[in-house]
Structures are given as C-alpha cells and as structure tokens.
Image 1: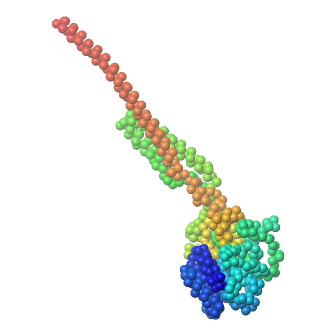
Image 2: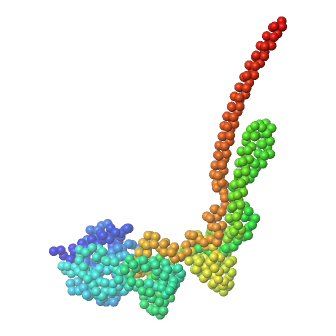
Image 3: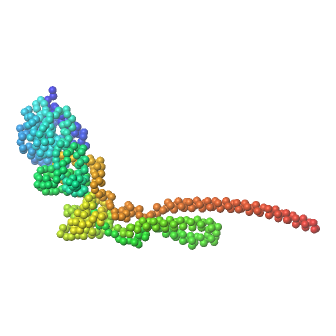
Length: 568
C-alpha cells in the first residue's frame, strides 16, 4: 500500500503535467509556506519529476518583505500549506490576501491546492477556511488533508455550505469543475442607447443581447431589477458596463467587464455647401472626356478645312470615297456626346450644391474648422495630436457656442444620439442629419477597470472574447447601432465612392467608340471590295467593246487597198 507522500506527489505530478499540456506559454508552479519538517520531500520530488516546469518557493515572511515582481508569471497551480491548528482563525484572510496580491493570481485561471497535514482534522472542519477563500473570490480550490497513511480530497460548493470527497484518480475537470455555473451575481447597466436602454419596462440593447447569449449557453438565470431597488444599497455586485463607469462609493466593489468595443472617437463636422450652377455644366464629364471632346472637335475642323479640300484637288476619287464615311462617324460621335451629356446633366440637376465640409481627417487638418472636444479628459490628448493641435478647442461650460460652427468629437458607433446630446449642452439642439461623421476614428481609449479581481468575471470575459472571435459581437452591433464604416450621406456627391459614378470618364465611352470604329472600318473595307469588283467588271466590258472596232478598221483598210489597186 502506498503511503500518503507517494500518493500526494503522484497526484500533483499528474495535475502539473496536464496543466502544462494545456498551457500555451511557460508556466510556473508556486509553492507557498511549505513546512520543511512535515513536507520536506515535496519541493525536491516535484522538481525532479517535472523538470520542464519552473518553480517558485515562497513563505509568508518574504512575501510581506519583498515587493511584488514587476513582470507577472503565468501560475496555473498554487500549492499552499496551512497549519492545522489555525484553520478557524480570521487572520488567515490577511495571509491569503497577501499571497494572492503578491503572486497576482486573483482574477486568473489558477488552480489552488490547500494542503493541511493532520490526522485529526475532519472534512467538516474546513468549512470556515472555504468561506475565507470564497470571500476573496477564489473558487478553484481543492482541499487536501494529508494523513499518515492516506490523503483526503475535499471539494466545497460555491457558498461553502456543503462538500464532497473526491478520489485521487479523478480527472482534472472533476477536481476543478467550472465554478462559473451556480454562482449568483448582479449585472448593472447604465442606460445608454443603444448599448443598454429601457423599452417597455425591459432592458434591451447590445450588451443585454450579448449576455443573454452567454446565459442561454451557461444556464444562467437573469433577473431584471429596477434602479429604485439599488438606490442606497451597499451590497457588492459586478458591474457589466462598457461605457460609463460611476465612481461613487456605492460602486467601489464593482467589476467592469471588457466588452469588445472600447471608446472609439470620431469627428462630426457640420455640413455646408456652395451653390455651383456654372460648375454643374461641366460636371457630367470628367476631364479626360472633355479632352476627348476637344480632340474630336479639332479633328472635325481640321478635316473640313484642310484635309477634305486637299483630297478634292489631288485625289477626287479618294475624297468621294472617304467623305461619306467620315461624315457618318462624326455625326455618330456628336450624337453620342450630346445625348450622353444631356442625360447626365438631367440626372445631376439636384446636385447644384457642392459640399465644402471635410470628409477625411486629412481634409479636416487642412481646414479652418475648430475642433471642439467636450470630454475634459480627452482635450489634452487631442491637443497633442500634431495635425489637429492648432484647431483643438476646449469646452468652457460658462460660454455658449454655436454648434454649426464647430467640428465635435463624438463616439463613433453612437454618433446619432451623441451629437444631439452634445449640442443640447452647447445651448442649441442640432439634428444629427446636419452633421457629417468622418468614418476614420481619431483616437481610441480603453476602458478603466475599477476592481478587476474577480475570477467569475474573468471566466465570463473569456466567453465574451470567444463570441467576438465568432463574429457574434459584430452582428449585434450592426443590429442595434449605426456603423461608422457606412456613413450616411445626404446626397451621392458627398460619398467619395458614389461620387466617382456621377462622372463619365474616357474609359466609359472608349469601348463604344472602338466598336463603332471597327464597324465603320469594316464597312469601308466592304465598300472598297465592291468598288474594286465594279472596276474590274467595267474594264472587261471596255475590252470587249474595243475588239470589234479594231476588226472593222482592218476590213475598211483592205477594201480601200482593193479599190486603189483596181483603179490602177
């Protein structure tokens, strides 16, 4: 029969090996307050049998004397020995808090072994110790009672009211189950549309849908609690909000969840236009197409004034051959140009107002529009952006502003609501349609975490991150919010992509001209072939006509000679 030391070492070696296989990076095993008299064998044997892992040996003396390390190590397993005679002392809270703060394991996925060496301690005697661990929000704890000839593994529930005894042959999942289930906590939202808003006495929004998805998969029971029941309450609850964080004393013990979208700030600029009637006459065609029109007009004038008279004098037949075809070509080009121009001009009659406001951050930096930064903590940050430092203006609450004269820094994905709230504070409510949102984010600021030291929130955060990777968060955002990646334009002339479709360019008409020219050349070739065939036929007829006349001349000559000879 194996003694307790061998069983304990083999159990820890198996746990360390399995945790090392599931760990992505280097792992460190921490052993704290290991008594050299009772567990002298434990550190050396663990190091010998798991030589590929790093070990950290600590005791309570050097934990309180030495400053915490600047770089935190990944500690998947923490082994703590607790004296059997001090299990019911409340001073263990300070001891455990010092250990957890020094190793920075709170809020991380760290399994913990609490070892008690005693032959007299019973499993029920560990209830108070389990409550102390629960007070510190440490859930993944396995209590090991080391006796002379055996060891006992004890696992408590989340509330430390009941326990079960486990076997040393149980799997890692059985020894350290998912403690997220069954752990009750409260989630509070600050009302901010579309992230969380009350409609028909229900809280809805992007955040709520995100947590509802997790709740359905993790068997979480959500209860809607009104704001009135929380007023004056001092109970602890976890704050699941991604935008506003209240810093009152009531919320000190709240924990912020990091949702995928942080504060993303864009610039909303007022829309202003220039009436451009004369420019509208030239807008249907792009510059290269106007150049083509000038080239064709010059070619037509050169042909009529220079080339055609020259052909008439020197090659009249060639002139009669080419003139109809070239006239047909010029008339076709004139018809195409005129009809296309009239159609495009009619289509763009509504675009007589040319937008003059900047549509990119680069255009904004070159403009003279002042940039008003209303969040006080961001004014200094924006002022230190080199290309916008000269136009940044801080908000003075004692002054009144005309919102239509300023570009305003707003949150990108809730721009439509944000801009109206800001303009009300400035003294004049302006509808969001009078502003244009530049889709390029100017800056991003992370969320401020008040007290992120809760393993339950850490587990919940992993679910949120996985849903983001699966694209669920992007779907919810597109469902509830206005996306800055597809800004709203009052007309297509404001959209840089749609604006390109308002102009006809050379590439639009060149294929038509090429096909028409090919057909024209083919018709000229057919005409030339027919002309050649006609000339050959006419030449043959002339030869046949000339041949009888030559025979008649010969007969007349012979008759004349015969008469002369007779007279003689």
